[in-house]
Image (cartoon, rainbow, N blue to C red; front, side, top):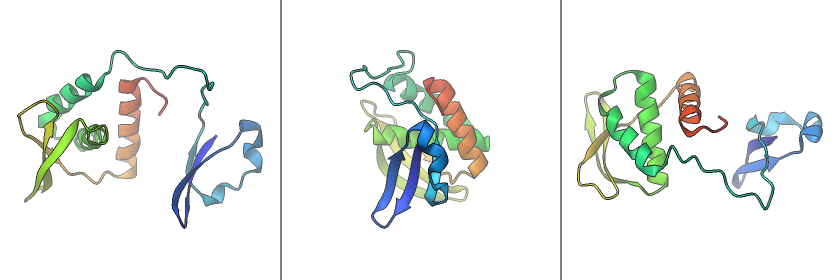
Length: 139
């Protein structure tokens, strides 16, 4: 099991063997999940169907979505691409519908408008499921 707890120094990930999990005080955890630790010599799994270019194209194709879950999905996808340094923030602007981030995908000139979203817990769960399905990973 893997867990995340908040300490005075910040967030800390804690990994616990499954057979020891029943004895762990889970009240201190912000969240926890079951995971499988790869063998130290194992090669990292890569999903050849979903590469960085595909994720960038998906972000572009979702430009006109209006459904709240899809808008949340697009915003979180943008954050992931920013973290991977594939998407750069150029500027932000406030509109009557909220804040919009002006961004560029690496290697492209077109400016993308990404609506800033504060997803609800249900939307986060839905986005997590959608991303898990797309990336073919455990969510």
